[in-house]
Length: 93
Image 1 (cartoon, rainbow, N blue to C red):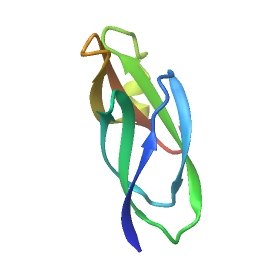
Image 2: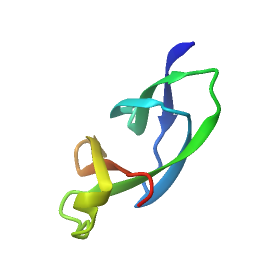
Image 3: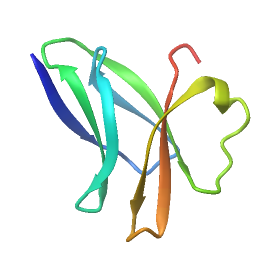
Image 4: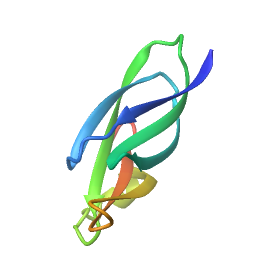
């Protein structure tokens, strides 16, 4: 059954999430000051591990990242004092 779920995002450079297979990421935003990721999923499918990269504004990503990541979204915490950009690392990279 297609459903929209959310996951808490850790404020770490690299992290993984277990999402239902073929989950379609919709957005990343904060809720009550905490970063969250929303995705449309088939709640009856098996899960897969997906890899993510979080980068603060002004922090280097590395030139190879242009080929290996997909931009998801930007969010702010601490009343806008910290701005982060979320990317998914492409499969196989």
